[in-house]
Image (cartoon, rainbow, N blue to C red; front, side, top):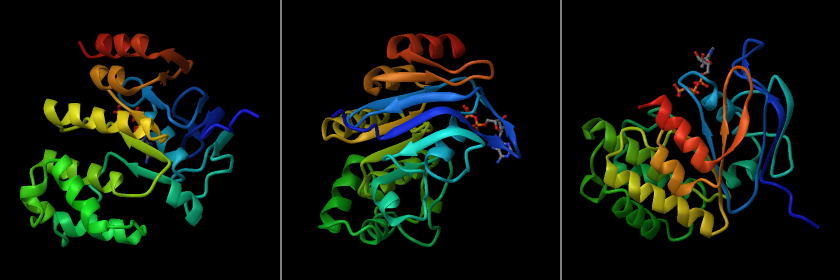
Length: 230
Ligand SMILES: Nc1ncnc2c1ncn2[C@@H]1O[C@H](COP(=O)(O)OP(=O)(O)OP(=O)(O)O)[C@@H](O)[C@H]1O
């Protein structure tokens, strides 16, 4: 029997106060695959991601994650789904390493200290391990949030414009990390404006828009982004 998709969205309608922000969205994401949401500013990519991780009730259509309706209060859901959204959601009174360690321990990660040390190195934060977030640059804070996403146990990783505020070298490292994620059987749903990241990691894309949302091959989606952001 074919494996059930990790995410199944069928004519999914998302919006605020009853008003949809984009055309209905239909896609599936299988394990070991990366699906990218692309589209202009304000087209609705983050809103779709919020619905997938349970921060927003769908206004219509079907949404199943691991073959269940989304319920972010469910422990089983939270152990499988890690997300990094476009917000500065860190603890201001914890250092970089305390932040990662707390997240790791809170999610029952084995060998948390080694895992944290590895992520500090990978995200270029070792020299800032004892810094408070206020003493980090905006790109370093972004690295901290990404590292906090990667420290969690997960089968599905949801990333909202993970390239934001990262320099080229860090974007390349992030791309390698996402490729490793899928090689290990993990699934990734991400929104992006970066055609290089898209080409490096995505298997398919969904163009989110007002009139119609379409599934696109990665190259076509990357060309579309390049045209939107010449
Ligand atoms: N909390 C909210 N309440 C009401 N409207 C919102 C809210 N958040 C976003 N919107 C609106 O929903 C629409 C879609 O926003 P969304 O953040 O999903 O777009 P996006 O595709 O992620 O954009 P960007 O590429 O700029 O990040 C926009 O018109 C935005 O103004």
